[in-house]
Image (cartoon, one colour):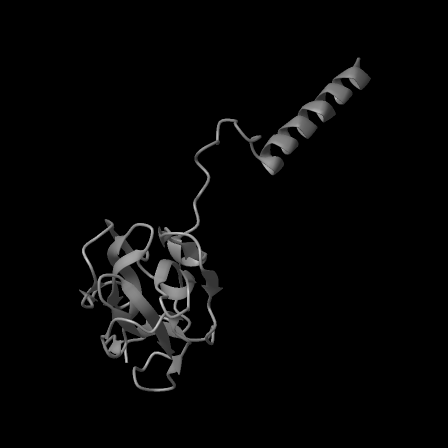
Length: 201
């Protein structure tokens, strides 16, 4: 009898330990209550805006820099886009990528975020093409936030997208064609914790 009670006691202890040590099974009492990662703990891809075709491009710049400026050519559509990064102090150690799209349209000239600010979002209009495009400049905490002038036409559907608080634009996915009639076809941005943190210079 004592032996049976001892076995029962050991079995009960093992069941209790397995419940405490391993937690509930998926779909059990804790399902849906798991803590979510904070937005600044992982990169976040936004929504792709635009059409298909052309060539696909991703980040070609130094990944230890954050995007803070651009140059665009546009008319009825966005003809060409160049992106620029800095290391947190606008005007210092800039890196400029190749242009995406063709040579047409009017040049906006370089549009650069104020010192201590980065590209933290984008807005515009798109359909099968990138009809219009502008960006948001801001501090990572969004305490300072402004729109750059939009460039392009009035076709397509409007979009407006901001990185989560604590993140800035760190990468992109772009489709464009680059012949003599080339245009920017579409863009998606990747948001992540700024390489240089939230230091305001």
